[in-house]
Amino acid sequence: MALSFTNQGIAGAPVTATVTLTLLLFATTVVGSIDCSTVTSLIAACSSFVSFGSPEPALGTPCCNGVVTLYNVAADSVDNRRSACGCLMGLITTYNPNATAIARLPGLCGVSLGFTIDPNVDCRIIP
Image (cartoon, rainbow, N blue to C red; front, top):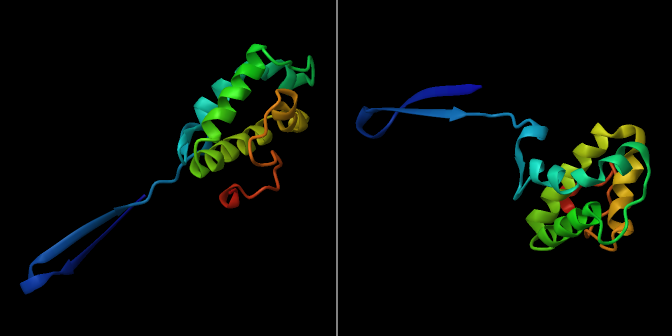
């Protein structure tokens, strides 16, 4: 959606400013510093567990390797943690039938992302 307006500038010269408002669609955009497609690809190897609740991932498996990589990226900065949080909350919505599986991934893989994966968490206030 674009909003344009014209105003008289210095010495009566017309000044035109265009403000473009873009609605970002969660699944296809960047949320903060981490791209949600990156978060999704990092935990893609966990899809069986996330979809069906089994088999539980173990340390050293591709699933846990992806979760550990996500941990390393998220630990880098507050913006990265908040971004990862927002992306994971979107995945919880997508995988609603087994949303608790996503929340369990960090613990099963031996890491803490610095926030609880819960749909009630406000990702904007994560330290």
